Length: 226
Image 1 (spheres, one colour):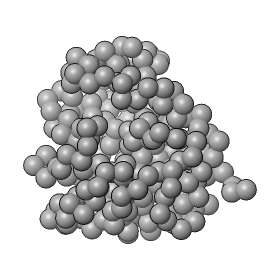
Image 2 (cartoon, one colour):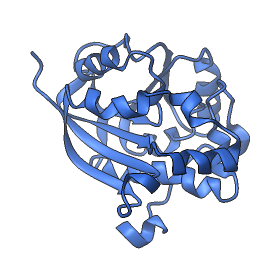
Image 3 (tube, one colour):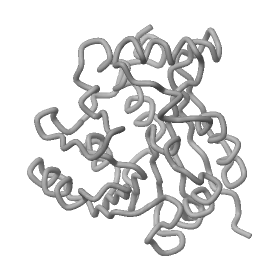
Image 4 (cartoon, helix red, strand yellow):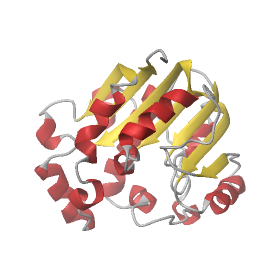
């Protein structure tokens, strides 16, 4: 079912072109956004996330797990200052590629468990299919809360976790979701709920339940810091 049928007209996405993508690691599959059939499914994540971004531009936005920077042209339209952090060592190369397409982003190499930013640095933190790869999510969430300001938000898009969805991924790509994620998909939302409160949730598809769910997109507000 097309996303525009469910939520109204789809937002126009501004993504880094396929020929500009740098493969930054074994689970960086940004090129999937341009595959037939699978590309439409992949781009749903970004459409869902875009709908949850604050109205108007925020001051400072951080993408956790930016990968090849494929979503950063869109995120740049929603903030004055764009930042990104990822564990791969290709920050400079991705920043250069973004700059070639008119996007300025301050990119860093580092882990979500130890963010190199001051307290309450960001008005919005975005994580698209990335927190499922964090080894110690219970260490990462306090860090993400620390750098999110009190009036800010966390936007997360996370893949579904069912045998049906995993089988479909295997057929389309050959990837093994259980090998990539282990139990981290199941543990993610309970971990986030210790530091953040859900404001808005969008599920795709919104019917038929967990068995065929492709994505959950959520916007959170931070709990008060202790």
